[in-house]
Image 1 (tube, one colour):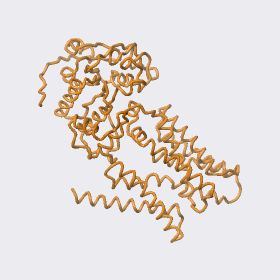
Image 2: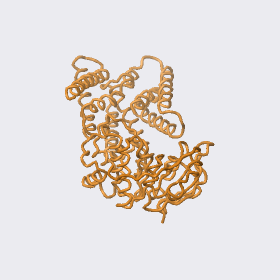
Image 3: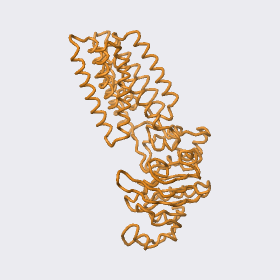
Image 4: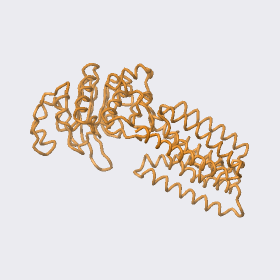
Length: 236
Length: 239
């Protein structure tokens, strides 16, 4: 799923380029584009013998290339494009903020309501199917929710760095959690702390926000990893 | 009514015939073993019966289509592969199972006790041994009180002692709770000692019936294409 996140983020560049060329809202078009890409990836994963990595790898590079090609048609410096590539929290418009809030609440509601089913499907889709779960519906909705979540984070962290928010907090939580509940709670809390701390540091030192958030998370991960190894060594 | 009724079942992957014209009835409250050499289609047959792969023909579970029988069946796969470093406790894992009877804590404890894992609730799933994991998977499958339990090589990767106690558990579920057991196995001694009926498979069905009646030297030679003779050993229940 980490590669899926990275792939969707990069693929969204084509949607952003279309929006910039057509003078539409980039986030809105990127969401629609990422949903289409996510659906195509899902269908190809299920209907062909191609590996998931191959499918995502091809779509991710092809969509990004399409984005670069389309943007080359627009003359002059593109500040908005740079903000999408590397993130700029100050460039978020009020409409986009409302969009982020509405979609984030929708995704959160889906995750809470279908928490057990999603986990069971992710663990083992065959036994989930035998348990009477509509596996296809859950998987497609999860893909779409992930795709939309990633695009929503693009304006903050940028296309290049946004997948770090999927990977780093969960990886830190995995090092410290002793239960699944602990993992989920710690992941959410860590995400919030890392983003807020990163924004604070970027403001204080006048550093780029996206990169500072990712480096804050990475530093936290390294420290936690070392401490967990020391604790494990002492207890053994 | 039969537990499972299979009529003229055919499975093909691309142009390759995996199973051809299988027809048999598995009676309720039986322990039925599906045996055959590697590549004979044992797991494919189990998955077809469960509706996990496409097939031609008819499969009825307790007289109904599989999609209408999910509440009455449970399945333990051959390999439950998951990220062993994933921090999920046994209790949390069992709590994921969807049940109309509710996921009461007492129900989970009862099932864990049933499989001899009552003290493992707070243990991490990834830290269990192969045998313990299989027992937890059985406990999970029992949460909805199934009428039929499908097992795909359930003792693979378990040591001999663990294997024997595992099959004693299966026998207990069958005899005490009346659960129909359908399992894929390649361990002939286990089949001979525990199964009440056997399906011999090598793409086509070569035999079906009581093990002691149908598993003749001639049948085993036909099935495995080599001379095999079964010597019956009495299983020590406490071993």
